[in-house]
Image (cartoon, rainbow, N blue to C red; front, side, top):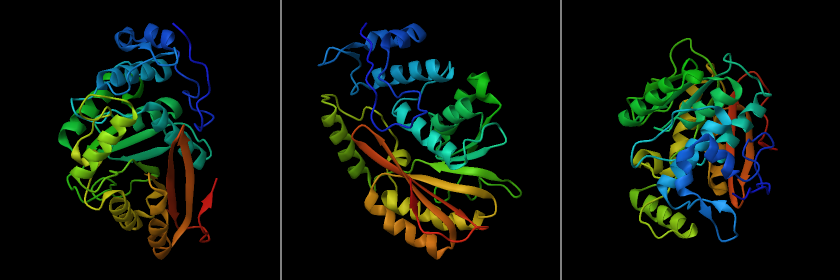
Length: 304
């Protein structure tokens, strides 16, 4: 099979997926992937990214090859994440805390999902200790199942069921508990109709003819009241209550036009520092909003 060797634009320098996938090696690691690999329009070996089964098989192979995660699956209809982009978030967080390694680094993942992808990558790549917070009981049980099935990370990841759909940190951060980082991939859409429209647009961009979204996703994964902006604003307000128990709070922000409206409440709450970290994967642009409280002179947002 032909090896894809071109560099992928925009990914973090430490990202293990900076070059195009070597499908021969991936198939050797995860033979189930072979059924989905075929030449694309350029003659390179690839998969149909509009096929949810193919995308899941690719994820399973990537996790096995890069991180030694031997057992990974998701229930039907749940979010199937793109591994390179999720890995990028983790690497940028490592830069934020100067690449500290080991289980002494504790991370809270808000909305860990059935896929539990951020804890799996962070624990495997850096040895960090994670708490994955999840409001959906099915996703919570599934994430726990994945963790238990992978002995290499099982001792580093705890999954907690969030009982309030309105809370991010309340009920998850216990008295006397401290986290170096929090992370979140928030619901982007403000309604089910908006999420469905976005799903079909993504499918058209992939050239797919199937119905549905290739990456899947349940309601709480894709949309919430107020969409991304509303969700993150609520997270920011709540974070001030836990200023003494967390180092950096962070979240993905898909729309750059939301940043001014998110930075305003941070300065009102007297955040000590705010950073906006740009990310890119090919044509897809995103960014991390990071903030912390206390102990430092208040500074205006910085980019890197």
